[in-house]
Length: 313
Image 1 (tube, rainbow, N blue to C red):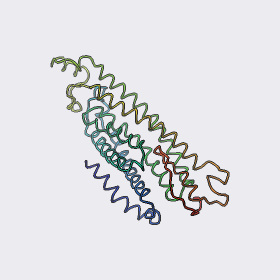
Image 2 (cartoon, helix red, strand yellow):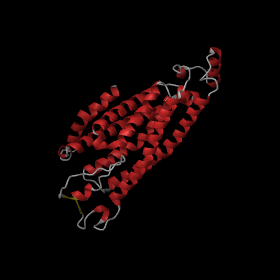
Image 3 (cartoon, helix red, strand yellow):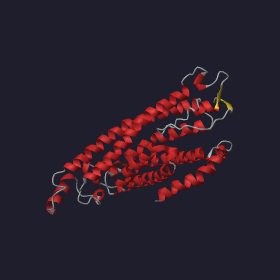
Image 4 (cartoon, rainbow, N blue to C red):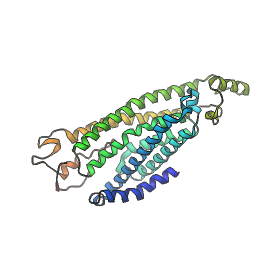
C-alpha cells in the first residue's frame, strides 16, 4: 500500500511539477489525454529505475537465494525478495487502477498485463515462488528506454539520432531481458512447480513423522523455510500463476514485433524525404501523428489535425 501511495504521488504531484520545469513549452501545452499518458510514463520511468536497482542488488547480495533448491524456490521466503515483490505488486496495483479508469487511452493489452503481473507478484507473499520475484522483475530493464522513446516523440525529437540510438538499445534490452531471459526463467519456474506437484507424499500424507522426514530430505530446516506450511501447491494456484506467466510472455513477443514496426516507421526512408521528412526537411503535424504507435503494444490514432510545420530533429 505504501508503494501504491508513492506511485500515486509521483503521478499526481511530482510528474506535473518536474515536467513543467524541464519542458515549460511542451508539457503545459499537451492535450489532457496526452498529459495523462505523459504522467503515467514518468511513473513507469521512476518505477523501472528503482525496481531494477533493487532487484540487481538483491540478486548479487542475497546469499540465501543462492543456497535454495527447488523446494526453497517454491516455498522459501526472504525479506529481500518480499521487498521486491512489495514494490512490484504496489506498482501493478496502481497500474491496474489507471488502466481500468483510462482503458480508452491505454488499451486492453495493458489492462491484461496489469492483471497478470499483479497476480504473479502478489502470490509471492503466500509464499509461492518468492524466489522468482527479483528474477522476473528484470523484465523492467527495457522499460527506461521504452519511456525515453515515447518522450522523444512528444518533445519533437522523432527521427533524431538520440531516438535512433535509444531505439537500438531498447530493442536489444527488450529481446535479451524479456524474450531470452524471461523465457528461460519461465521454463525454470515451470520445472520447479511441476516438481512441487509431484513431490512424493508431501501433498497427501497426514503423518507428522513422514512430513518431517520429507522436509529434511528436501532441504534442512532454516530461516528461509519458516513460512512453508504443509508444502501444498493446489492445482488452482499452479494454473493461476503459470497461466499469468504465459499471458505476460505472449504479450512480450507480440509487443516486440510492434516495437520493430514502430522503430522502422520512424527511420525508414520515404518518397518525400529521409526518415519521413518532406523535401525541404520539414514534417507536417498530421504526418507525424500517423507514426504515433505506442511501443506498449497498441496503435494510438491521434485525432489532432494540425498544419503546424516543424524542423526534423
